Image (cartoon, rainbow, N blue to C red; front, side, top):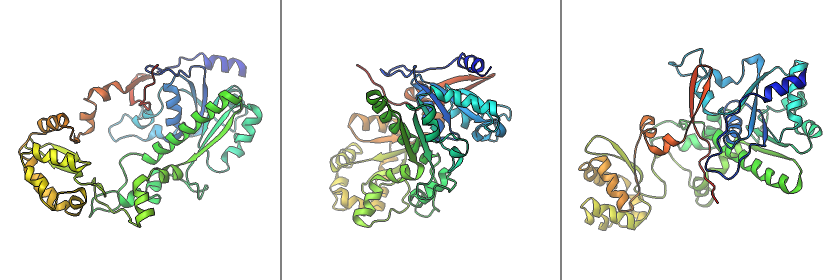
Length: 376
């Protein structure tokens, strides 16, 4: 009976998206024993590449908790936009691990799986005999990918905003006079998901040459710290603790400065060199500005940010946003429009990155996690 169930389950339709890539993982079977954002994001990555991804959800809690993370205006009976964002192209199976038949169904699925993605809390995997040694005994060639929260204190509950606080992001994010501010998306989860994807892909390469499975492990804490980049090095080399300066760059000016244009729209500058600054001043009809001693080099511009912002504000107010951006593009000057989400998805690139899926009577949408192309 259990075998019949697996055959019936495997016959369910599977969505795939392998366009624009050489690699097609249609022969790959991925079991997702993960919830919320980071782990499911890894699963969706493989689904987009054509893999068969089976998401195991907790029957006793009505599935992944994000099914209920809804905006005030979302239909209470519909699947949430949050859940939809990272659960495209998967088969969903609701399981109660305490039920023998359900549990054996999971074991059967794992017996011929290529990858299992987990984010079990400390001790939970071993409790259900779903830890790496147990599954490896069942399937020696499996790639077991475990995503943890805190590397330093594994027993600690890890949510994105807590990691943003603990790993320095909130302290340095926000305006000068604002309190520590979290970024408006779960970036720590996204960074950790990328780390786990990379680890799994390396493990697949190893398996292709050795035939052996692997244990791949990453944590939100390590992913967050590894992504501090130049802000970490500013401390490590110069003992400079990054402060809240809004969108400004600590080492470059004018970079991250936001200006309003004549048509009451906003744009941001990203001037990265003295040559770019000189070209920009010429474009604005104020070449003499770039020759002032206070703005002559990047070093002096960083020291005199407030004066520079005032001078550029008055000049930029003479232009409409789109015409100034177009002129900057032609002259190789980095500048961008500050767009809201509606404006972002009016662009051709964003439009091409929308994935749709029918769930019941509901048409769900999300953005592709794959933003690369491989061609021969």
